[in-house]
Length: 392
Image (tube, rainbow, N blue to C red; front, side):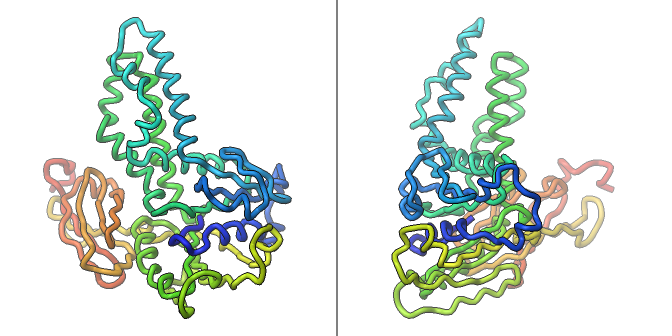
């Protein structure tokens, strides 16, 4: 996934990286069933300049061949929402027609317009990520490059499945969905559809933090603004457990004197893209940028690599500690809260829900500290829900 501040040349870097292959490593891999479909470049910006850069037609929702083995897929979030909701509404309408008794809740849901549904937090972003997940798990492509240009806050998009799942569970908790399906059989299809969406939310959230299959590439300008954006981006990646793999310094954009970018992280590589000698208006010129996007590794990051240990005590007197490596650009803007099974952590104005391990869900949250490298949060058992056989 290629992301970064607006104006840093994300689309150019993503397109150039998609056109370049690591041929040395590919020889060792098993041949694809469709060798003409090696790389899929996905852009989530309907106004993206990528089709013009690659010299292909803009066909939202359908992949277009760019060159041998490389295809482009442009996604339109509104179109994805309308198509998905149309199928869902058709399912509801069929349920209404087949019902022996009138169910007002089904009629109300079926009458909701897609434009109204868009107001539900995370819906549009979730559908985009679900389509990307489906392409990634289809077995058609060896590599997928996702261009997140045109997104005001890429991390808000990446956390959308978590936000949507929280909204679903608040509006219609799973235990109530199951009870409704048991009491009213005609609601079984509806509850199954909602459960499928909730399952997809969990699946996508897990996929985005899997360092074995996902690698993040942060593109910044080679100026003071680009260097200044790095601490916040890396801190949010730590918080989300997003596997940031490389920093791409684009010398073709930016204002003022060039600034050297240094990242003190053994798992994050730093590369440079030089100013192009000619307009980047065709694939051949993009290839000359020699952009190489590092592949995923198995190094988990931040909250995705959290550790839980017993500090002291036994039974109800046990003190647990959960910790992970976390950058804090401004320690005064760190905050902590609790919502159900999640730890709500705020870093530099960005809040993210960190899912607690099962043992800590039965505990009260205690003190939190930061030693300059790791966040450490203490927990103590909640007597009301702690297993009786473990209270002694």
